[in-house]
Length: 417
Figure 1 (spheres, rainbow, N blue to C red):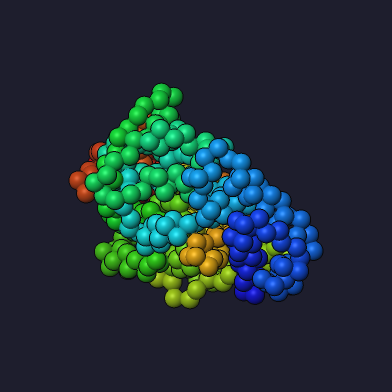
Figure 2 (cartoon, one colour):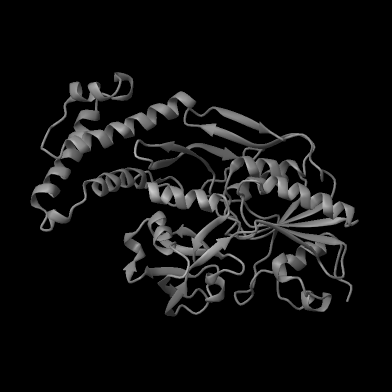
């Protein structure tokens, strides 16, 4: 498998080198391509495809009205992005420039500078999946479901998801203007947001007032999250709590290894997921040993912002009949991305495997159905542990978070007022 990924990366490098060599009008035939890469990575039909790219390159360089402003590397990046976008795996497989690679690295580590919101591509529109708690986006009133129509006046319909993210991130203290289609009213409004340094606290928990239940939230699956969840569960056990609501709402996923580690905290044996490659071969991924909470009473909270690694955890716990999921159908991001670094530091993030639940259910595009369907009222934001410091049992019962309250009901833990 590793060799095949390397070959795919080499072929893309050939494309970049070929385009760079066409500035002077050099046409590459198969023999020229074979001098750049082994025959094994240059298929017979590659010559015609590269020649077509070369034709477009040449026309742009010679005929475009503002050709003096053309940046060759940007043409190359655009060609690669177009190839990836043509796969139809919108919002998942993608090409990253070196600058975007750094932004991605910071996001995976749980830190970056920007507005502080998770976004997703839905039906060709850039949608807020969730503002990060305490972020400029949250303070500006952005809500899950809001649509970003434009960034600093540029229509997002002409931008990829990666480009939108790149335009909203930037140095702390600078501003960006978003044109927002409000999900609740359908009204358009311009929002000026000052960027800030964002540090995502991916694992938080609180004891829900009037109960012996812990509300454990995973905001994303960045490096170290599985360890943080293990630490939280050990503290929950020491405090004598006898139930956990695992909140995966608006959790956009992240690192697969961290998702496997989180699911394994609640399972004694079996598989976390199945992986299917391009040849149709299926490989099970087993539960990691040493989970600290295989028997704790457990309910999951999910919604349409529950994606990727969060869906892996959901599917594993559902199929093992370890926990019921309450809420809404999940997002449906069911592929494993592999990072293929190109020669200039840019990266191709390519879906190379599809994951299935342990029982073989498809996640990709379909999402996962909750065991108990509960919609959150449009005017109600989910309660998360960060907001619960001063929460009372009375306020919890009146909060309107119908999903959280239903989870408590399933655990037999209605708050004592």
